[in-house]
Length: 449
Image (cartoon, rainbow, N blue to C red; front, top):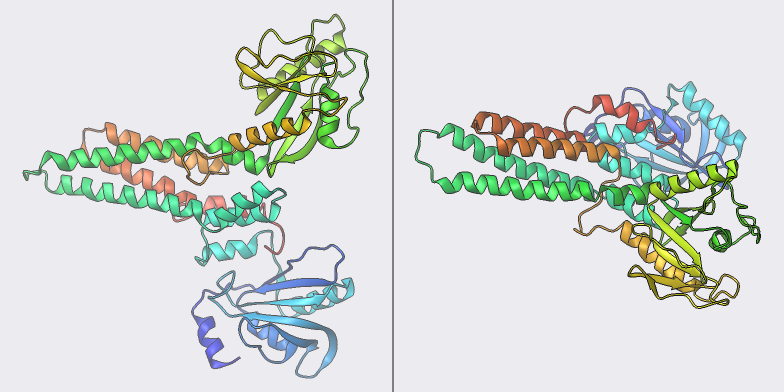
């Protein structure tokens, strides 16, 4: 190891155990990336390839079971050396870009274990990055979401969180609380002085403004959760309105049986696709009508349940049978324009006119559904959206303490409530009281991350 590399490594905390994992997954591929981190990384890499390459520069090396004696060549690999603290984990670490043959991966893993390293637990690399201050808990959760992202909306949201958008906002709020606490402490310390009343008025005004901002963030929380977890659009309406045909068009395949027989759909049928980069589950429900058939009646009950639970209802009807009532917030779709005239609106709700037989109006309907998906996931305030129930609970707790502070007559009690609000925000980023959260959070990660 060079003197400069040793000096750079000494700056970072080094995990007592050296860990390794296949970061590229187990699927068959041309290249496999083996990631190693911890106190013994430098010695391990020297054991494998003889000497350390320049930090953060790719180098093609022969890997050996023992590079000093040239015992048992393992592979020709691209090697990257990351001395801490300027590494993902903040520790010394390296990557081996191996040929992805199972025998090569197994042989390299065996040598790492022989030299004292152990396989990493799920999320252990990112957990060490949090412990070493390379990222906070919110950014770490963003990494997990980024790896799991399947849609464009999930990718954008996770990338923003990984880049610290939520962290910066929460830390900014914590700074405002700290300033309010400083003012409150001044009011306590100088209680006998003739301080102008404007001081306390400014304090309360600032607290009220911050509370309103935090409450709006919580109110918009459902939008972020919809992006992360997806939305549900329920297709509802009477029998033979074209619900199953619409589901098939949205799926691009024959997912549902289409028949002129009324009441054929007895249970909910789901397909998953994307709208405007957002994951959406469309549910084809049983036709809504009065029926004596026990099985069909159960289907109607389930249909109404999905209507209540859905983020959006697509209410369909045939041209000759417009509905008497409209579900709240529904997208009204009048089908069979090839058979009759569809009204422009029902109960002042505009109708999207289509014909599933001829294809008329279908692209206009898709545009309407995409706009609805965007509206249901947009932030009206421009603030980053919270993405997990943990975030919502933490901000709600901070709001409760801030509200309690504003209602306190005793200055000491107000100061304590402000401290508790700061603590609630601190737990979100991982600055205070998070030991009990670490296992739950990082257990969701994949091996090698």
